[in-house]
Image (cartoon, rainbow, N blue to C red; front, side, top):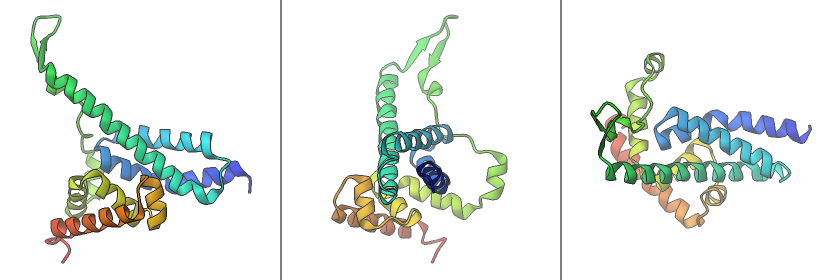
Length: 181
């Protein structure tokens, strides 16, 4: 199998899960799609010649770095917008800047019919986790990465991965206990 075919197969395999992870992390479908596409392009351009066994942790490290970059851009934007809480437009009307900030993607009707209340609760519980706990949980549970691979993707020690994962599981059990006994 050619290296390009292997890369395409790998990217197709991780695309949907990576998108879901990014969407949960940033709360916006468009931003999540941009993050995943950028992560895929970066892996293909810079790391395609690396052994295929290294692609998974590399890809998820890139993905998590892009998510962190998105958080930083938002924090910077929020600081700027909070400083200028309102302004006058060309017609002299006062405009509330908070109303202009992008928020989570609106729920699509067909999407809402497919997902039931239980998965909404899971999404909420995952969104409430601190970023590093959510990252460790998603990489370990959803992606099936080993502790070592997760540590490589998160750029931290294996002990940190175990701690973040354990805390995430505990918080999720607490938050979802009513739904999943």
